[in-house]
Length: 293
Image (tube, rainbow, N blue to C red):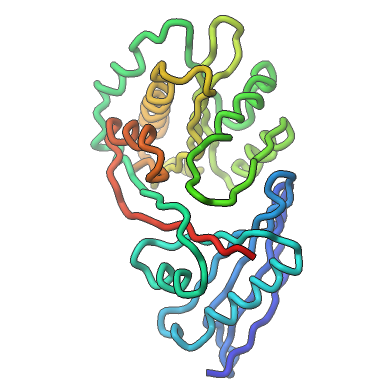
């Protein structure tokens, strides 16, 4: 097949990253595949690039994927990147493609879903109502309230030791501007960012949080983002407590919502156990790959 690789202009730029794109087309000009390369720009992750290559099933094994990969790797190296990551569903053509082209498997993720119609509401209510001496729950939609902003930003370091296997993921540095930008990005998509947080009653500071993004029309599946507790406050069941509250609130406030989606690294048995006990069921497995540049 005669292939043409065309660099495209991608407007998807934000305060944390920018993105490059390429289109693969045949001699007749018909598109056969594409590649997107996200270049992280904030300190702590400015060594990293994230790749997504897609080739139409009927056009595979004709070199389009390799040509797109070559363009992306060249651009990442030219930009001074150290590592490139990509994800593929286990057993998929993309899984084999990445493994055959020098990418190393660095992490396995299990994706799960909680069908809300099957949620055990009485058990969830019991979990939420169980006493957690010294702590209370609070919640909000969208951007964190001003009176909680400083401690919520500080609580984001709870994600710093999230199990990432051998992934060269770097460090995500959070400040108030980044917190507000993340909430604004969700709102611009017409979705709702709902946060449940655990508060230390001794000083009123946030010590843990769980985030859920709900579709704007309140139907379909919502997506969990981060769930984390500061190291010095672990061991009190706060993650389970917060997540149970998030499920109950989603069920009550969005009665037409079908389910909740989340993914967990296989080397994070604590969070996997929480999801299991709350009724999340596995849907598929994906592998995170990394190429050292």
